[in-house]
Length: 268
Image (cartoon, rainbow, N blue to C red; front, top):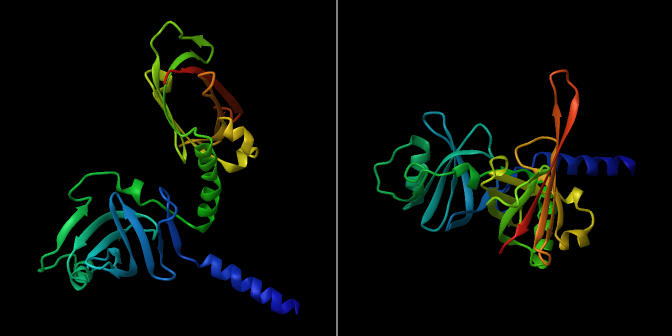
């Protein structure tokens, strides 16, 4: 009996390890699934839900093709299946899109609806996919955004900074905005040390939901390691405080803690 249980457990672990389903970091309900060969994707105002094929072109480039009714997507892969270098969203016969993926040219007319070769843009921001483990973590983190939405705290607010790291700016015109969205916070001001700040919610740091609903949120500072923020936003009193804690290592290898606090008034 134990052998049967072990075999079943090993099967589940193997199945999970070989799962090739990736989720769109911007909106986790969209995905590309190489295991079941299908995709449900959104890019700006364009959506597609259909089967996928992979091709290695005559020049050695790898492409993922998503088949729609009359509109098809051609995505050029990087060295990883969940990262893409470029995209073409095409209207025409699917057979010609297949030929385009194989030979990287076609004699038939295909209407280009969108492409990074036409519009320069941040394509990687739209098609940044995460695996199942990251998906589970992000799903939990984004519950924080749902709690904030239920408490009517999501939105953008105009602010005036009156104290930063012990320095009083009350008599100066240090202004900006703070935005709370479903993924994290964005602060932009004309203070040289706080021109732009972004952070992401972390469910493991927000164990008390009632605190979150009161505007007390903790998360990770984006693009930094060992760096967290704490935001206390009081809409009734029209005040807020941002506290940050970063861990740095000096030249001797000693780990140092860097703390900072910014206090502001909510103007609108």
